[in-house]
Image: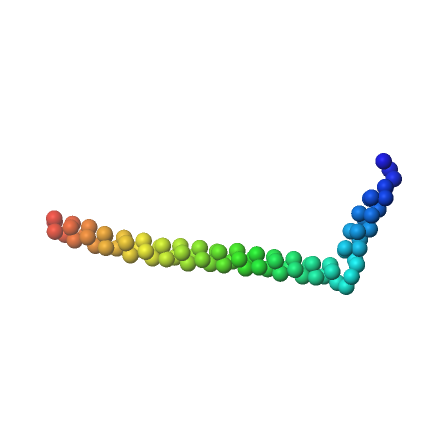
Length: 81
């Protein structure tokens, strides 16, 4: 149990070669990861902006819908008084 078998050493060697072998593989992987994170953040920001615009449009629509009904109520009140 304490010693490593040949399979352990081969897996370890493959991992080390993937990480440190070749020219700049880790920097390329990290660059790709950074681009992915930036895209994700941009997507979240876009979703928040769309939600704000939709909420503002709904608020404007509600305001427009409420004003005519208030006008009708006040004109009915003035007619009855």
